[in-house]
Image (cartoon, rainbow, N blue to C red; front, top):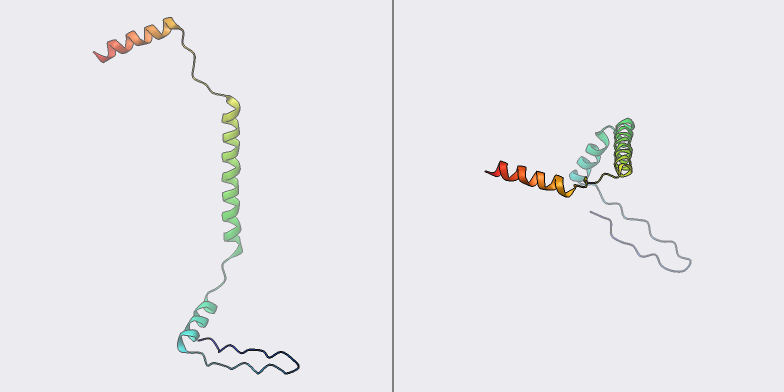
Length: 93
């Protein structure tokens, strides 16, 4: 439960002191459970970042290499195409 809001008067008057609210059992349990956990190791976070960065670099190298190859389907001559169509008809029988 939050303490009630206190408005600060304008002028030379000092603002009233904040009202203290006693902590209930839920707040105590949350504060102990959060503080009882040890902090995460920094190596685990940075290792994951390094592995992700390495994978990204390798995938970029592969992609650039494939784009430089300029792969294309082979051009068939009319005679070769007729031969392949004849073989297809034989296989479909």
